[in-house]
Image (cartoon, rainbow, N blue to C red; front, side):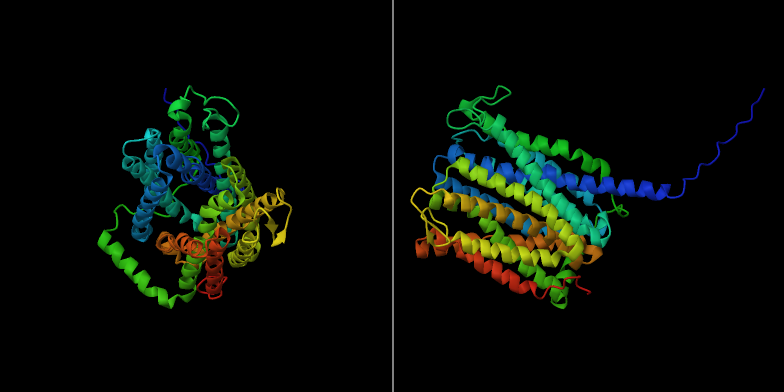
Length: 464
């Protein structure tokens, strides 16, 4: 006997159910996008600043001066590659819509480059292979960041972009602090061969061969792989992806048109110049903060580490708060406020010595100068976190929606093109004055010049 097969009745979504599904997918997309900041921040925190950089200078090479020089040349070379490549790759991604493909490609470089730092043994006979893989990972991280940032406009309505950017930046700081705490507590050994907890590195790592500290490379790679899972699960292309790659010739033609159009876009051009200057000044504060405190206040590496953690914590908190202010007032007021604050903080730094605070003498051996500098460090972290989060929001407002990645590429180019400026000026003024305090004053000048250019930036975007 044949039985008639009936089709099940179509189930129509209840009123509002379709909207709910879309909202849920968008929320997941936003959370996944934020996880990139959380996953990638350890490259900056662990490798560039607190763990691998100092280890390379003190253990991989015997001469700290030569080590600093070699490290600087390597990072500078990576910066040059990124500066000339970022706008071109960004234009190619905008034309094809293949943002996720580029992120996956550069994620591979990130993971391979950082993991290979395990082979940076103490007293290495040759250091250039080590610096090469470090730069490969750095390029992977920077380019993956450019393409991820370019997705920001697709994550919500215009008025929500600032909040999303600030929350993502805050989450990045959290990832940096947590990864640093894990490394200090369980892996990175001191001269005595023990971690901050007073134990040998876990997992049977040999402290005599500095395996606990060298593990920072594989640890950074593993951290990225694990915490990028939500990103690749939840972040999908926001528009159709082209079946073909845009040719390099076509890409260069479009990029040339964009560059030629800059004089007709004074707000965008002023923003590129202003952000270039104040970002360079901020990086100068970050780069020379530890050197300054060690030289002027005589801080130990532990003191500097605590200083960095405090700055990262306040950076996370105020990046989140700044994102809310950005949503309510727009990014430009946040940027201007933070640049003014950092200018005043930089001026205050000059007044702090072991015997003075704000030029007022304090008793010898007083803890007040160190306490003051911890407060200043917290303020630098707070203003710096909000500034960087709102800076990418401002860029989104100024660029053509169809050329966002190209815009972030030009933004990266502007930042890399003068990355040498703050260190060079600080070095020259310090040498001429013979004073570390006076030597940081060029940072103040860069902040002020950046602030002046911001007056030509339209708060509501180029078309406002």
